[in-house]
Image 1 (cartoon, rainbow, N blue to C red):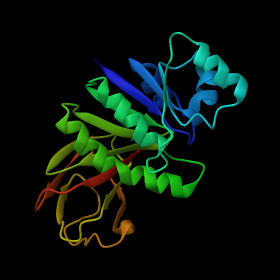
Image 2: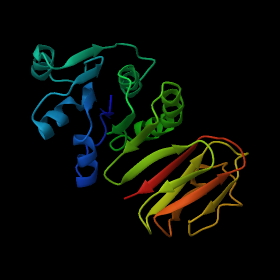
Image 3: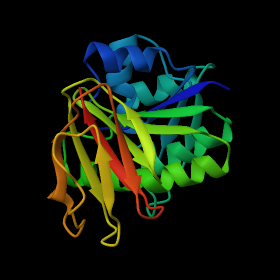
Image 4: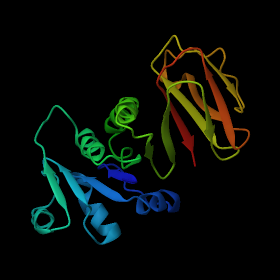
Length: 216
């Protein structure tokens, strides 16, 4: 299986780059709240719809259930959000990669919660043989680095580093502002850096989950 797109109920992609990434995916999974904007954009139903189905208008819900090409996975569990439910469905397909769209925008608490889930998703996916999981918006992309890494980017793009590990120390090469003295005890501490070329290196003092945001 190739790449799976998961579309959450935040801001639906509209930029050329994010829409191109979406349409290039082999399978599309919509959280129930994303079905209507997906239909408005693509004009056809996604491959999967996941959630408790309470965010779909009755007429659209009837059409979804009646569409033979759509797998409906109804889950009423309130302890897990629809994005995580959709992620579990995606993993069952055995994908090489997963792009998550619509995880940001609209309610800010949903954005923070969704982004904070990404390190766990990456760890679980790696255990299942899925090597790439990211969150894509019209403004940039969130990835996770778990140890020393090299990251491709656009020269002069803005880069932010977010960690919950106060013991993590990072030496960066290819970023405008040094990170050696940064203590990651507050989320803003590694934010608003700039890549000086088409890639940068992050050298960790120990393995740790680092969320990296690369602006477009």
